[in-house]
Length: 630
Image (cartoon, rainbow, N blue to C red; front, side):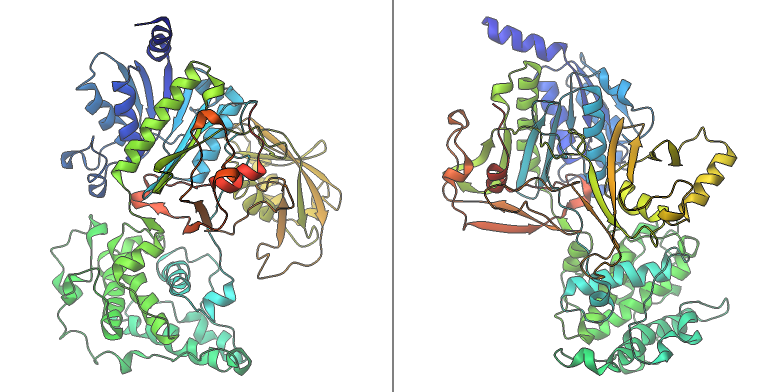
């Protein structure tokens, strides 16, 4: 073994590594780290093993279902590498114990996470602790690995990250044109109204000229009386949302001048007078355990077996009623606390049926339960091979980081189709974005109506949702407007809660046009400035939040191009070309080797079972707008 190999082996064996995530990528990564000679590995993962994980997360077996992923992964690897140290934490990486001091003990952090919020949190802790981060993700056959070193390369948040796409409320409630609109309506409005938090605002009544749409009868239609028959209640809901609401929408003639008019659908026109003679009934499902709520299903009761079968209007209507009955008969204690979960079979059946009935009304093609589940859960099914490739790339970059071989760092994209006979596209990392509010401390600009918007709007929509802060502190000059923490006394908590309900201009230290707010997260050791700009009006469809934050995701455009942006649940671009980049050592720009006209767009979607969610950047476009590390 020569000197260079000895130095590399020494760096590997002496390294203390933190892995965050023990799912699809994590299983492959832990195995590869152990086989590559790493001796001290720590793993954090809050999830437990599910049956659906077993087809690709190879460290797990059926007997492990319900157990901690981190612990089982550790035990599995120690069976073939018993001499190394692996410590597992069955916990959320955002827990207080995983603070900056905790991160400082590691030589490198390796991410295999499934959501943007946790990725941003780890990125900030790595910056505060000055620990290199190797980020990763996969979506189906696509994957990427990126290296983030404070002061040398861009941080994870230097560039735009796709966020979930939003749809205008009027499109969802009144004029759907795509099946995804029907899914959003069924999942976010109807399911939430019937089974979710009753205190949340949720208007399922379409906008109509007739005052009847806001009548007392309409307001109470979703309330079920204690002695009301479940089937009759289900029919009442069915008739209201698919019949009455459509009739109300049709009364607005102006809306339908240039649109296809929907068809009201009532239960009496589709279903028999009583469903008791049908194949199934809630009376026949006593064999299903109440504790195993995720397995409760309406399909077997109705003789439906194939999730890829396309149901007609009658079948969807039967599933709608039967699923609703099962929720009240078998899962009544959960009603009022439920949120849609793609792993909840009954929830998927209900949403699929409701979306299909609405689609039928609006002349939109129907979809199978399998297809609808994919849309509702934003699922791209995971590919074990992609996870293995990405895990190997992570370890390669981690070794470079440990050797401090900065000239050889690479961001690597895994493509679905060969480009110049290459499936792996290496790209040199880029310098920190001077406009990044996380690593470059550039002030943000917030356009907001300071007289109408409350501090709560600022906290929920900007500080938490957009800036990703968990324990925020907001100051205006020397005045502390809001703070979160366990060490606050009751008077302070009451004062801050009172501030939340005040408009910005009515706060003890009024926030008006030209005000500068300081927003901090002590756990993440992150602080940024927000310059407030008062604005009277906002476009309800284009700016539904009633405020606009600038500088938090967009990078400066170059060569006359605008930086890529995306709406909530947005599309991500992946450029794949028959002519790929030269080998990495030649350091050629991707823009010199890839044509512009060969693009493939894909939804920003979750991998199956939330294992390996990623936000894939376009390797061609980033090469045009970023400056490489020298």
